[in-house]
Length: 338
Ligand SMILES: Cc1ncc(C[n+]2csc(CCOP(=O)(O)OP(=O)(O)O)c2C)c(N)n1
Image (tube, rainbow, N blue to C red; front, side, top):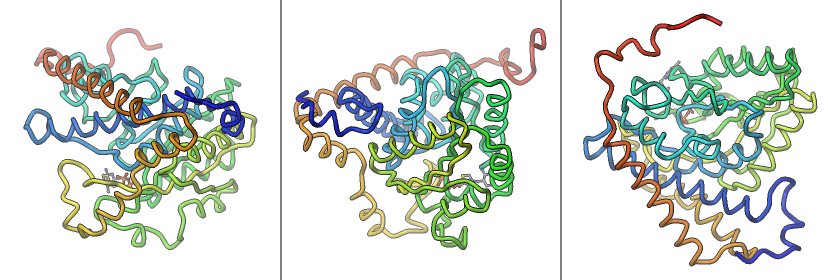
């Protein structure tokens, strides 16, 4: 790595060349995990995969803007890069995809990508879109009442902002000025439904005005701009300024999930054109222009990610599946109620 002091001086607060390379690595690691999930699905080894290709930059930027062990993440099902960048390991991710008994999220009883990692302050994901946004506001209110100095970041797609619960959550957060960042990852589609059929406003960020707090827009395919935007919102919340709605404009490079076929609602030309905004080569060029990475380092990091994901796949596949005896584990409470 060839970092120059003058480059370091122009970086956003909290980012160093070392942290930027870490961000790059998480993006590559996520892409490798994502591809593996779809390959395993096509091999008939896992039932379902959800992609985050096209969302990696905003997700890694957001995760790096939070303080681990202090702040809370209340993510949605597309947040693989956010989860990996916030402490979930590739082995844990693959264990979840294979739905093995040792899956720390649900002992193999949940949908893939439905994390619940209390020791890393990642709250449980809801398949019911926008339901988790009210939970996130509750966590933020508790943090404020307990004077914990913690900030909550919750994320969702633009389609989720048409749900009643989403509006109730933002309204309540605005009244009580809770320390929260609402992060909309706008990929323009809710499965097959385009944004133009979801809302009468041009930008999701415009909706924040109705709740009395700022709405800001960033390029969600640029990890540095994404980090800066979310970091400002997080620190504003931490200092008592209340909520911010961040809208990250990004795209979804693949079908909604392994059960969807995007060619039924968008053309091949459109699919090819969104791929020109791929955040990974864009970030590689950004790092190269600043002398922070070269082709050898890129190749090394890509093969390191592949080794990690290969190890995680082999390890997770070899683990025991859940048994009938575990059927009620995590369904009913056991032990004393605290
Ligand atoms: C309340 C509810 N309605 C419908 C669905 C089915 N559904 C699952 S994902 C999804 C699209 C959500 O789109 P968006 O919020 O834009 O996020 P994206 O998947 O595009 O990242 C829908 C409609 C659901 N899970 N919950």
